[in-house]
Image 1 (tube, rainbow, N blue to C red):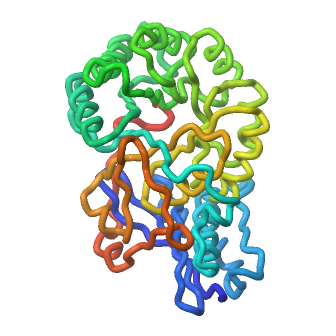
Image 2: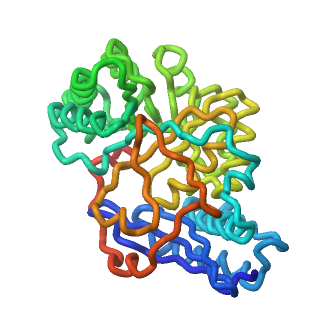
Length: 375
């Protein structure tokens, strides 16, 4: 089975995002699928997929080395290389008629604990709206949630000049806790929005309400401050989602910055990169909770990895941003008692409907109220 084409297609996912799917064709008609989504840089990633994928045309799926490297190219190249890697693993699994987790050593778990991260679907951003939406998610079988409540807050601004915004974010979390009770885990994603003083203020306000973690509180270019915050706050600290591989995680690990690391399969080199990164994280004896947003393809790949790694905590997922997302594929996951079922079909265990993708071409996305840099 030889590769005849590798291309990327941009698909409208919601008012906030477009997906970049990688599609690998073979001379036997079997297709492999990957996800190379990078918000706002979709067509730059498409070009990178074309350039990197050209090196694999004509190669045999089972006999040849199908690795591509995103090293040194930044997030665009990392996303392209990761999406291609996922598609190559999908092809290998299909060629061998085996689910991907079997190729990775076998499953330690077939039910994968998940948490619902809902920033892209909530519309009422009042504290009451956060509480109501949290209760709705729990009623649908979720046992763990994550919120992104700190709209407009920036690490560049002193606490005294944005205290009202910070307090409003805290109030959103508190409303969730009051709505769902203490038995539901609720994490807080700060999106790198705090300086040290603001982070400590938020920790003091939220601690009585038991957040299961505080994610990315301080920009990760300041690992010494993250470590100090971790030591002084008394909270579980998570992060690392934008790091592009095992080597990029080293500075955070060496400084003992976090309790939980969140590699994203779209940036660390796909499935191959996730396994390499996890080997490093396991050697440091830290927990792993993969960052997992975007498409059904990303979710499937993350589920297979989550099934096999030893130091797994739980997996993020995002409730569908738009109703048509369920129609993009022949499989979609719904939460059952806080878990997703591990896919059992060959390769990823999910296939895209290319005709449906073409019905939702690229549309310029609106910016999220929360941006990654907290500007």
